[in-house]
Image 1 (cartoon, rainbow, N blue to C red):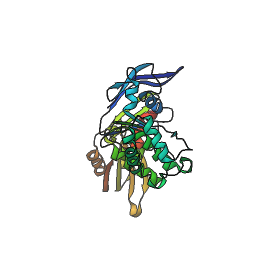
Image 2: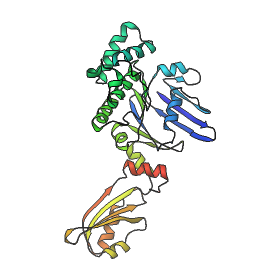
Image 3: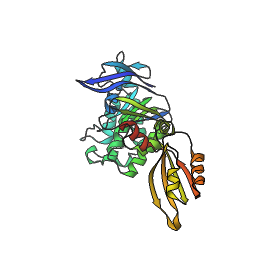
Length: 310
């Protein structure tokens, strides 16, 4: 539904997007993650046809940004990071205006406005001026205008920015519901939100796509991401000297009754629990816990965007 092919966008000497390629399928919510200035918003603005690239192209529902920019816009709903709204208008009036701008026939416009008010839970605010609304309700109005023409694809740039936890949860549920039938590209800085909302995640850094996949697939991309928790009692120095070369101690903590907890990091991606068990036995210690923990999305994100320095 959304296709980005070899996209490159420069602003003077600055390369904002560098040969980026990806797709978003119908019925899929794809998270778009990256540090500030990584190229997320620029990529989204190219897809929507607001700016044009120096190289490559983007297509939405088969419409190319170069050959059919109007077809692209008709197939898209777009919510920018700073939601542009006419604050002097009432919510219903604004949505009716949006319906007219989207060429929705008058006989259908009222039903579409009513549906958007219900979909975005705007019933209590429907007849208030937009200037009276909280940030959370303004985001809902922005989402309603993006949805009013029932587009097959949505681009949401930081839709939960500045919202409180309750509002974030509501927007997250709405995005998941919409994602059952639409292709959604969803930009966010909140890693937990991406993990809970998205089917797949793209990570961009310095204009380049550095990671793509579900959280489990991304974890496998991060070198040194295997972490083990070991709780034992015995000769600590003997155990440490007997650890395999690919293992380092990330942290250690003394526990009651002479037990010691070690967090061990391994550069090997496959499970080395048996090897660690053998090391404890060889040290003559007692083992009461040995657990492997996969890298979190935060750890993967930091590794892919900072070269593992974090």
